[in-house]
Image (cartoon, rainbow over the protein chains, first blue to last red):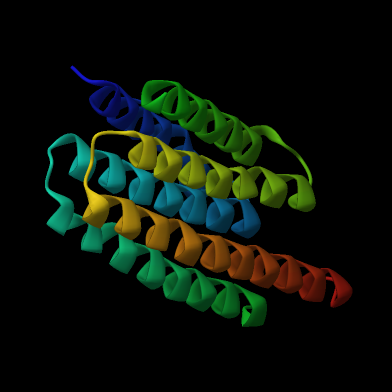
Length: 83
Length: 90
């Protein structure tokens, strides 16, 4: 198992507390948990693509970065206007 | 070198997650979230110093650049929304 595989497992385990933060707590904690989890998934996909030598798959984390940015903005806008 | 950078990246990510989960104030959580950007740059550096080819290096650097702006924009939007709601007393 290379260092990349180990890092991938570590990033995967770090998703658990982020999920807990995104489920419980106030609206702010949930959104911050969500965007942190998105960043972790981006790193996880990068590390997995490099570890398995499938560099074509690196387009996936790039797309996820852009899409999670838009999704986060939508969530924040929705919460900003919610009563 | 690459392995050391990866360990650093995981450590930064763990710090970020611990901060997001445990810190009490909004600005503290957002600063902890910013650590994920540093972690992503460390992953990009690990790829640069690793055995990967040019395609992997340029793509991971692009991802790090885009994520830097995206995370900064998200943190700004979250802080602004929280401030607005606090001003309105909600």
